[in-house]
Image (cartoon, rainbow, N blue to C red; front, side, top):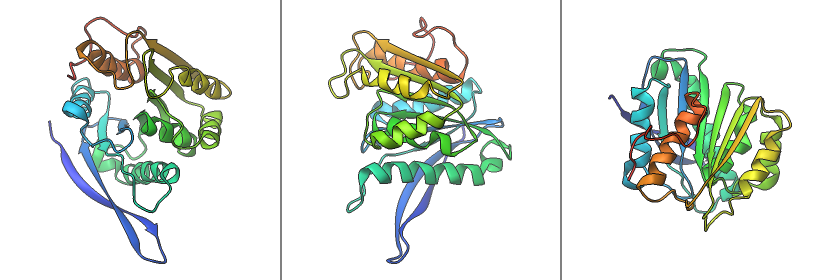
Length: 235
């Protein structure tokens, strides 16, 4: 599986000429779809035990689409609620501009998946890019700002998938229900699933497998979720 890494510079202060370096990993695939993964607060690009890298391998092997990874950084001196949204928006723009090299299509569909604060950023910006057709929100928080999230989901016309663990000790799982309600105004499809005996991080081999299955549920048209032994072992 071919993977290449790039560093992109996002301008954060034009007057002071300050730029933020954002690392991205690209898994190219000839497809009309690009999947972008955004971790939670200060989450590394590959995630614990390389779980996001493993999910990328599954996405490529099953030919769901090309796959793009980025980390989640808190920049000193910047509002996190704004920078978490700006970083993701910037990378989406980069992906759109370079889609020919990433997936061979000039106008691909984009699927976004985000965990915790990354999910909140996905929700806040999903309606700003017409290329975004599906979003997967794993234990989404309110880090991007409740108003921004409500407005973003309230205008999104694609498909929304939300998964929470019922033993989440960081974000009450009922936050997922609020996301579901925000989405129902305009979304084409909204699905919310609560996983029993599952914490915020989907720890454990069983929940790790379920986490990978969420990608198939949202992006590969699996009707059932969770779904047997399908997916990949992340832990």
